Image (cartoon, rainbow, N blue to C red; front, side, top):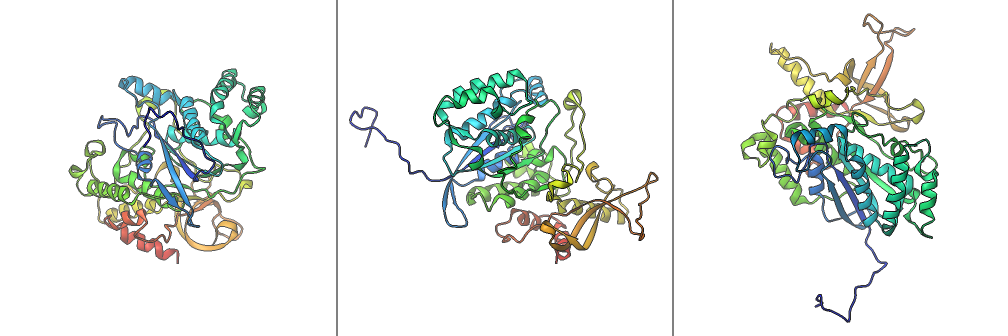
Length: 451
């Protein structure tokens, strides 16, 4: 057995390296899963996901992949005063450093053929989008060249001229001349398997990193399966600030990524037990102080995340479904999760029981109606039927505009998200449904509509 005084042996490098899934997780502002303060230390969905992953997993071809995880607590979460934390969080201070730290982790661990995964919440979502954009723009450099890259990239940032991408500037040309082989992999050879984000932002005090997010790589870009899904929650709930509603988005994300990332079944069981304990009795949950009051799954309180500190730094903008992409970009897979319908249906039942209850309608869904579509079209113009959300065109008086045949004119439409046929014992979404009062009844009705 070797020891620190060995003088006749040294470890040698090898070209034989097992493929890896490199997972980058960046938390949201004021969210830290490593704090001992119960008010700030509740694990967000990003933190929970980072802790539920197995160390290795098999793909569809039984090929083994190592899985390594990077977790960053994001801005406004250190050992600082509340005022300073709020200032950092609202202004996005430290965001550039977070992006480069995530990129540095990738550079230090990447080998050709590895797959990349990015998960983030709020400014952490923006961080991982920017980090993924940086990877797509410049590729992955050799680790020993990181200081040279940072020096030249710092000059590029300080020049504040983003009319051209970094790769088309003299700074990049100078960097590439540093070595005959400066890149481990060029951008076109890198596989980004998943970018999973909750409550992503792109303004409100966040520095302009658009030069990372707007790069057009259409000449080599692979076809990605993209889901933009509106769920029954507020901007604050989705990534873990209130257990019941956060669990919906966490379950949704886990079910989407399970084909690509292996989960540690013991860790998952522990997390589900914690969620169930909080649903049934918050006093039994270890995060009871952070999660506060218990409410049933879909019926949990939807909080307004637009706090006074955010109001000081800027104005919010409601989501505008189906208005984010030009028509020529094609099928964008934007969806409404059935939990929106579940909550609305529950409120209607309360109204029918003569209880004072306003039917849930988030600002983004104002004017949208849920209908059963019998002759619709899905991806690749394949015929399908099921539940759809429609926004009809209306005149200045609020009445529907009719076409020449007397039918109402559809302004926009999008399908409801269909909870798939993953085996029930593997689906976290189904697990939640089975443990939620009345939701199973609503789910069975929704499922019938897809048949």
